[in-house]
View 1 (cartoon, rainbow, N blue to C red):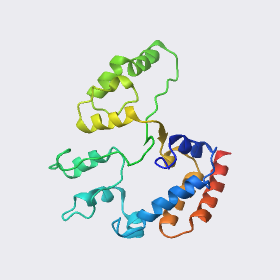
View 2: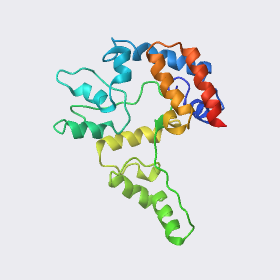
View 3: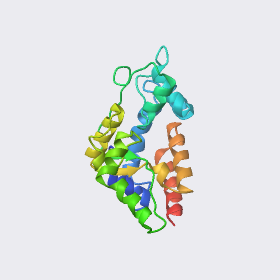
Length: 217
C-alpha cells in the first residue's frame, strides 16, 4: 500500500479514516498475493512464504547454494547478516535498496517521554533534539535518528544509506501491524496469511474491516 497508495493512505488505514476493505487495499493484496504465493518468485511458494521463520528468510539468500536472490526486510536485517555471516562484507557481498516505487518510508521508532518539567528532563530533551545531540547520536551509530542534525555524521555505511533514504522520504508511516490494536492486528495478520494461502481477498478484507472498526471504537 505504501508503494501503490502512499503514506497518507496507510496512516488513514491506521486511524480508521479508510476502511480496510477499500479498493486500494484490495489492489495491494492482489499484487502481493500474485508474487508471494508463486513458487517462481518465492522459496516454497505460499507455504514457504507463511511458514519460513523470520531470520531463516534472511539467511536463505546466503545459503550455499543460495536459495534466494533477495529478501524484503527491514533496515535492521544488515545486523542479522553480520552476526550470522561475519566473514561477509557489506557493500561487497551484500547490500540493500529501497522498495521499488515506494512513495514514502515505513518504519518503527522508540518514543521519548518526559514525566516532569524539571530542568534535568528539559535539558535532556533539548540536547537530544538539538544540533549537538543529533550529531553525537549519529557518530555513535546508535541507530537512525529523526533529528535532521544527525545527517552527515553517521560513520557506519549502512546507517549512512538508511539516513539518506529517511531524509529524502516524501512521508512516513508506521508498520500497520505495529500501530494497530486488537482485534484489528490479529485479524490483519491472519488475513495476510489466509490470502497468500488462497482465501478470497474481498471476503477476507471485509472481515478485517469489521475488526478495524471494532478496534477504533
